[in-house]
Length: 441
Image 1 (cartoon, rainbow, N blue to C red):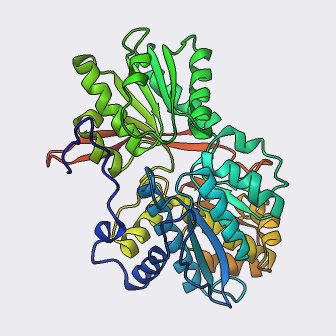
Image 2 (image 1 turned 90 degrees about the vertical axis):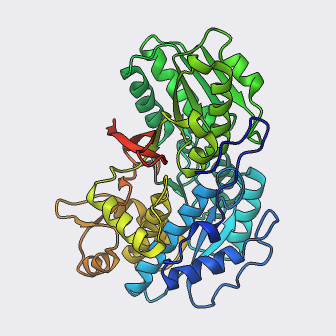
């Protein structure tokens, strides 16, 4: 485990793909990932993208490859490439092989919009992969809605539900209106009533903090403080933490942000409060990047993640395939990249044509049971889905991250949430372990 940075040192960047991938990576997937990574330049969009093949079916993958959440974006990419490989091995979609076109949103709204426009010019049937609401909202509002381009995101801001999108924006995780309520209940169940909130000042942070605050107030608990911080900030939270404890030392602090900023807040809070260190809770602060940078201050951190139980059959199937092909354990919400590819491919197969209109027309249909005899489709079962469609059957995709069942707004009808806690094992290594799984509401 890397040594803990000093308070004035910048957080450690997530390991580069070349170092984080073991030599057992399957050759076919290793080549695909290597090609995609080689295409990533240092500008707001890829400076030297791989030329798309002329006869493939294009999917636009827009995710974070640089910055504070690069590690999360890397695993979304791995998962998406795994899904593409499985579907192509099953014969592709309506006679065409899938091809991913990768762009970096840099966790930045301007870069995300620029990269989305470049993807749009390459004529994919859909764009997916954005996990930050701060990027997803402007991409939808400035690029995809006007173009009628299907856009699947795992951003969780409640503002996404309210978009006037003409049924073109969908997401593979539930709104923070659900996650925030579940997280507040989890904090209260542990007896904490002196709660303070610190959040990144973007659509994700604001939406999640508001959802938690509203739920706490329903239980007559008013947060001691609710402090926002700049989206560009990853170190130096002295002023924010002074404001956080201005009304007294809290029993619990909720951090809504990303791995590197969350790790810095945890370290600086430990240095400030010492033996009065409150219990830490978080949304978005999970994975190896947080643990590596938070050091001992991160041990005990409890985080919520939209996911499925790690022992659920569908997640287990996805996890086993991921480990076999990628050589790593899947992290965070990587499954959203996998599920998005399957949903797009299934909707095209259902429609019998390869176009953006076909995706929008059939996404809801393939995500839920529309008859009493629906055929459930599980991870890795694209060939089974095609056979069922040819027989005129109703199909219902069971995602790696749980049931989707899109509602009228394109949101999952319910959220399944995994609560994890950072612990140090007997071997001295820090890791997140599963504590509880709930479906809400």
